[in-house]
Length: 331
Image 1: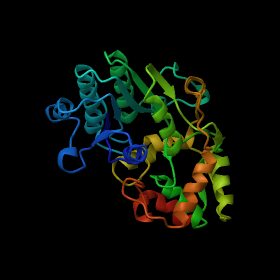
Image 2 (image 1 turned 45 degrees about the vertical axis):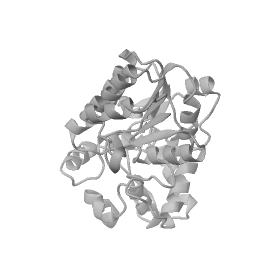
Image 3 (image 1 turned 90 degrees about the vertical axis):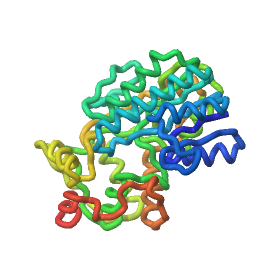
Image 4 (image 1 turned 90 degrees about the horizontal axis):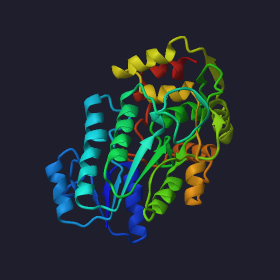
């Protein structure tokens, strides 16, 4: 039996669909669900009831207060405190496997060379710090087996988030701003590749951290040009020196004027290349979907006005662009 935590988020929904299709026994919980499935992992008393009444072999913790949240206390409460509750109950009830999803945000420097699992973590923003703390709690725990996947942004036709802003610019032939020269390197992960690795992990006894991302590494400028050409957009790239622009946007995000938080802004300026050799060798699998292909597919789906749920895109209209309207309407 699998306990799927955070089952109503995007990854949780996709795993639910996969487990149903493969006829795996699982119970899903999320604080946004109804009835017995409505469980907040920060409520340890409520959480323990489901452990007492079921025998779980695997816990998959998809629950997460996202990087877009402005509530620092809530980020740490859920990402660290809630995860710690799950760890303690998993140990007490002798769960065989614990799977956790960390993030590339555990690093914040400009890494043009590949970072591996041993590269020292360091983050200056709340989300990254919460994930580092949660990782450390797992490593120090008495869990029988655990796997931590460090992943970049998850992309698919059905999950866009702030990417819908970029797509609006391209579809409407707007000029697209880039910081400095746009040569910073980027990777994403497709939801289908991620699920493939999760399924493999279910039956592996280990205590390991893995980097997991697309094998394709390209610059932000290269990615934008591929997207523009894929739909024959007339968009052009325009380049800006930073000169504190990103810092200003991060401040404006805190007062809800800009939709881009510090995590998004660092992607616009800094390179982060993840070395995935460890998991490729151990699991004998590769993330096959290229960053450019997944982005082009997502762009075309958005252009064709496919319907998205609130979990699949966070920003869907120019109204939410805030200060970015200046670029959208005047450049």
